[in-house]
Length: 485
Image (tube, rainbow, N blue to C red; front, side, top):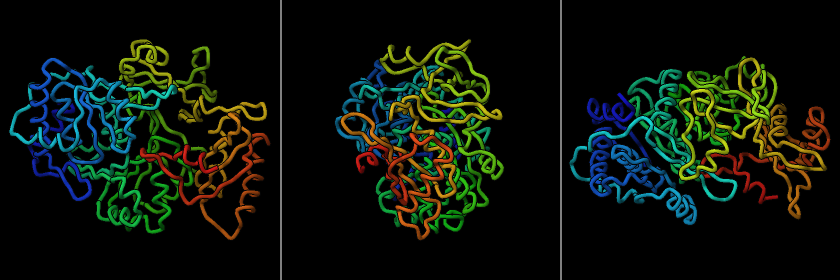
């Protein structure tokens, strides 16, 4: 069975099982199968041979799942767009994708209301399944094309590694559907007959309601960015008593701080913590590692893991030569999970995608190295700044801050004046707050960091927060932090 057939299988054998919960609404597998079939027929009849993508505009509504599956059943990829995006951004994505239509939840409900069988499955493994838009350096969003083959390779790896219980899992959906981390929880859940439990942006903005909802969710598989988990850990009651059924925490999308992982293992002694890494262009994640006490005692920063089977990950220098272990360079991913490229942008595709033997390969723009056969992520190449005449990597400073016992997590931002970096500011979430003043804490951290880094890499200013502000994707919002300086 391919992925679509696997999902429809649950609609046949367990039509009343809950596929999705969002706020006070739910969607059964029977409804998902039936209504996505009806939508597929509507799209096939309306657009005929036009295989232009379908833009699904919404938030966490059950209709979003119907729109996704209805689109691909009709032979068309979908483009998920969250309503939190500014109107100008939405319009740009629709224009660049050349979407055949934009489906709102209300329209999806209307067009999927009839009883109808989907047209014969015409989706081939190399056909686009979804198109996710990421930020581009020029200000124009880039559409990353992910084929059915890419997605199936990723899901097969996740199912083999995590051994999810069929019809026995409830997956937390924290990331919006427009962010590729959501692909991990969405399709691992649907492929195994699980329930996807969505957290809306309104809940994230209301901590009391959030914890109340989490407490009644019965979640077994937590999927989120580390920043979201760190925000939840601010609440001392966030632990095993609140979420007694959690078996695993799956993280991707940004750096997992050792302090965050350690606190989760302390609060949830019966659960596993997994760190993973991968760009959107390589279908969510490519490497993973379980973070236990041994890993925490041995490594800081934490490794991001070993490559999935069938995919090669290596580190290369500026001349494109593979580097040996312990040497830092650009992380390259080659394998069946690598995207065919950017929608309608052969120039951008040619710049970072290439053929490596018989497999597609992608230059990530990330720095890293292998040590003990584990990959370590060491920041972005484009996060280098020039300060006092020196080239400085912000990720290097952040990793060294996180290694300090007082620090749970850290973000370092350049202070820009007249278009140039003048100094550095460190935003810090402490592992524990004592009686010291901010001045005393700043002095202590600067002194400890000075034992690890040269003077020119030391932040001049330290700002202490309970948690970082988050973007709509659940990552630390660096832009808002910079604006606060």
